[in-house]
Amino acid sequence: MARFDRPIGIWLLFLPGVWAVTLAAGGFHSMNKADWGVLGLFFVGAVIMRAAGCVINDLWDRDIDRQIERTRQRPIACGDISVRAGIIFLIALLFGGLLILAQMNFVTVLLGLISVPLIGLYPLMKRWTWWPQAFLGLTFNFGALMGWSAITGALGLPAILLYVSGVLWTLGYDTIYAHQDMEDDMMAGIKSTALKFGAASHVWVSGFYSLSWACLAAAILLSGAPIYSIVFLVPAAAHLFFQLKSWSVEDAPSALRTFKSNRDYGFLVLAGLALVSLV
Image (cartoon, rainbow, N blue to C red; front, side, top):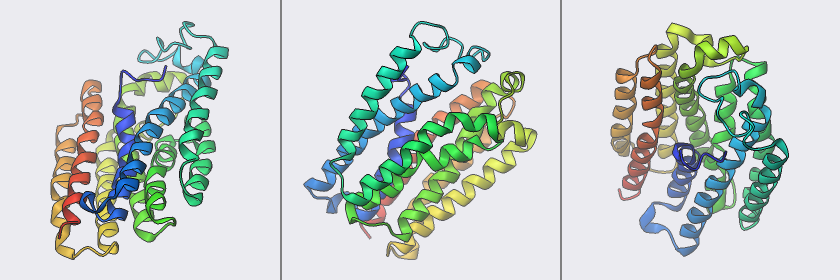
């Protein structure tokens, strides 16, 4: 139920926070013991809160999951785990997340608390709007804001741009992910950007990825890096380009492979940020 066997979600939740910590601290070489401690807390927090998000999703969607081929064997949907047990597990996870959050500064704690209602509401978005992937982006990238504030004690424009970059990135990769379930989603009455964009999804995702990369570059420049340092983000941009070249809109296995490759994009961005701090 916590999807520990599928860690891609942990990486996608964790990496925007690492980007922000790295940029705010001035690179890995400038990080002190406290900064590394923040990264450790962020990783444990990502593991816990990704699991909590999965449990919340499974509780809200247990009836819908039974109608979707890919999800009908989820533990609550198929009856292996009761709703009561799922709620108890969720409470334990949220308590663990609160213990992690309590070790941060005031601004970071406040941001973490703001994100909790978004986590709870996200599974409902597919019932209300064609844009649940955008809501996931707003929810999933709070780490970019929290990572910056955990180091600096405040928010700044680079952090906001990192957050916007993450939201657009998520909107792109989760649209790709949603292409796996289009037929089942239509039958179940579920909305998604994949269904909204249809055959034009490739164009939309290209736009989201381009804007995401532009916001990332702007965040680096506004943090004080020289303009030529953007060259360190070129490998990440190339990765997005090859994602789009290899993704077949009508092929579900292709969608899953492309979605999972976004972990590599996240690490390429991180490597670029680490190099930027050295110039």
